[in-house]
Image 1 (cartoon, rainbow, N blue to C red):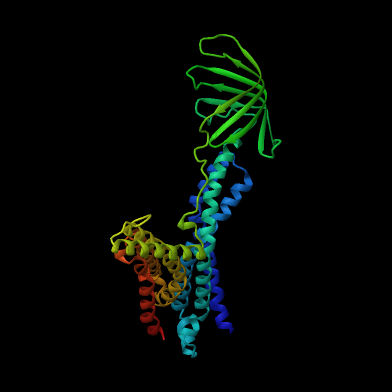
Image 2: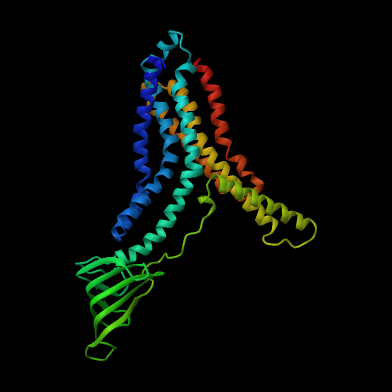
Length: 385
């Protein structure tokens, strides 16, 4: 690689890297809010970190193509306005040679985004949904923080001096609270429950306290006095709203799983059509429902691949657009680039809305922005030669 190509490539990579960092931070705000909610609820730090790492591929799948578009516009707009592009051409360097480095980067990024879309992002989505259920369950126990009153449970306030996490005889996780005080208003009157020690476990969406050496005052409504117990069970219902195990959905399928699902949906659709053509009642779903399901799965596979193609498309369009933009018109060039990116994504959103409408051929419609970008590049690049 010559000095000139290294110079262009270095400028392009720096611009793309800085832009990618900014966009990644901006698009990560939503995930950060979710993480903050888990932290506030007292979820374990290891699970929160795992949730954040699993969110990263989805953010990168969006930011990489956008960063390449912005870098193409900024770098080649500066080169053009400083007459460096004209000087390179005067020295006999072709425009395609000038573009070579960024195009290679765009192609490599397309391969990276293909991996993110078909493997890392589905796995990350599944991990996040699974962790969300697990964090919700764990948070029910982690809410019990020693040294302060906890009022996150409806009509119940809890206070304990010390908390110790351990395992019971069967190896299940259990939390022990010492000097526990519970102020219960759930039955329409104030009741105080004190226990020297309480073992806490999550059961579904409920928290169950096994009180040891406990006193209850008053024991019943309208009954004065204090009742003493060596041991009794105290239950707080529905502390955790999400306790069901998360099941995989098409968005969680990696490439091989999605391809197998598409083949299975096609076979099911064909079988339903054949049964209806023979005047028989199709087993399972109707041909219309099977056709919609096949259309959605088929669209999802094409949709992910189009996202991967966005990187190279944005480079091919952004470079000649940047060269046509003078420094004083850089704002217009940036607006044009952003407009192209938005238009690209809007077509994807439109086709996604039609995913379960086979008559609209959404799996073909989703390729429209790629064809438009390639067509624009085929027109703009020769003009710079």
